[in-house]
Image 1 (tube, rainbow, N blue to C red):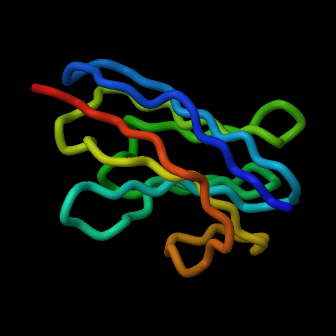
Image 2 (cartoon, rainbow, N blue to C red):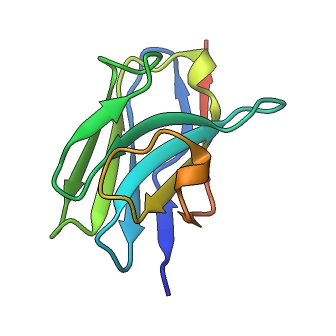
Length: 120
């Protein structure tokens, strides 16, 4: 059974940093991070393939870094220079595709989500 467990959310001030982690059972998977703000659709943030190729949404490029460690079973999202518009529930997701997938439809497995709140 595939499980994804996110940790690391919290409340910070604008300009601060926060790191999210996602422990993934099973695989190999392409792993992605998505976020959903109140009243908005879930949107793509970043993804990393099993081999380490990465891609980012334009809104987070240069501020967020996705990485894979611990024998590739854990995926991290380092978030720097956080802005109030980064406030959302962040979800980790796993795709059996071997390539980068930037849509929610491409991911079959999802974590429970973790709240990130950035105040100005």
